Length: 176
Image (cartoon, rainbow, N blue to C red):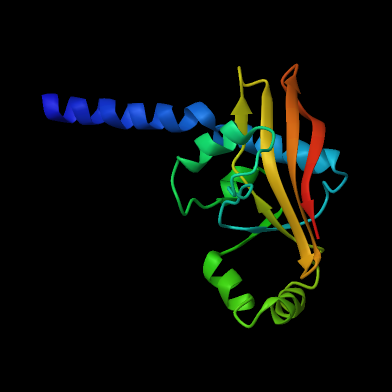
């Protein structure tokens, strides 16, 4: 009995530790929905890499670096799930499919991608939602790519006011 109680306490501690730096699935969906609506692209199907992404950890400094450092410690190989996006129309690209698409290089990979998904304007990469401070601000890394030299990476900072999320600012990190 004590062993199983200790196991339950350990599991609860892990769940609390994981959720301390990231948002719940429901809250994540609200943040993602607000972010895409504020970007003016709310009514479409999003093509998103299933594998969670984030800013490069190349030693350079960027805003909110400590938030992404905490998110990185959650677990490697983390995947997005349909439930992360609430009612949004999302097509998740599994990692094995992504690898197959781009196995012969960038140019051929984008040709395959656009042939397989002609309705896709771009392929997105997203970090988990990182909550800041008391949870009234959130930050998301957003990577948008449509070709070998058609991409960008940005941090989208959102603020919750009266229960609704709204983009506060977008900080471009790179563009190609």
